[in-house]
Length: 229
DNA sequence: CCATTAAACACCC
DNA sequence: GGGTGTTTAATGG
Image 1 (cartoon, chains in turn purple, cyan, blue):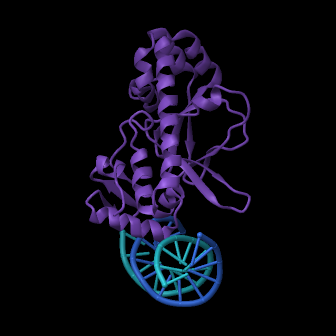
Image 2 (image 1 turned 180 degrees about the vertical axis):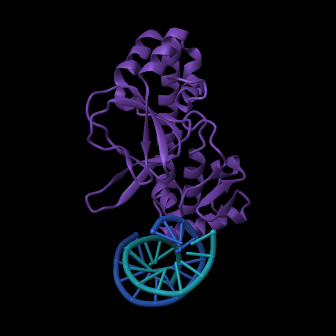
Image 3 (image 1 turned 120 degrees about the vertical axis):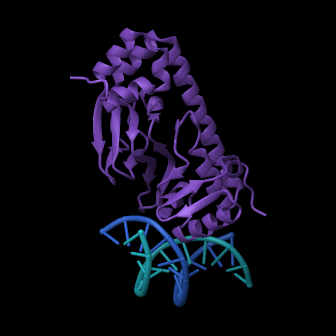
């Protein structure tokens, strides 16, 4: 059933956390984890649903977001190929607190809750990985609050963009990012027009190049430390 | 004032 | 058909 070129198995074997597992542990992970395709615009997870899986992104682009009763959309962060998410939701009871929506056709790897907890109970290496992941997430969300309250729109866009490239949260992500300016707006809380203006400023500063339906990051450290004026 | 935004429209991929 | 650039009128600090 499982060939060596199976994308799901490759993704599991390439994951940073898999390196610390024993052969038996990895075998159970491979046996338990299933694949799911989510078309662009589809929901990978819904706010309010029970949390049954730890989710890895095989390819595609997802956003963690929510919608207000009035229809206002905010995006917390993006999830790119190679990233795993939902560990926080698995470590507590209760429903999921956010939506996860595919911005492009995406393929997911779903590890059942029981397998995730079994790894926590049996692998110190896995525990360390999850602790680091949680810590990186915490740091990122602290930074997001800082960006939101202290920075103007262009600097906020720069930092929110740079935050996507956290190597723990989105390992091995390409500097060429295919994402619409509207979605960038949801990410940094700005309108489409304002994102367009800010992208041009970042391009002038030599930090990114703007393409049709995407952005390429030229200077990640420059984005991380960008300040207006 | 000034900056920003929604809405509308015309392009362009 | 979705993404993008631009204008215009409305909004709000």
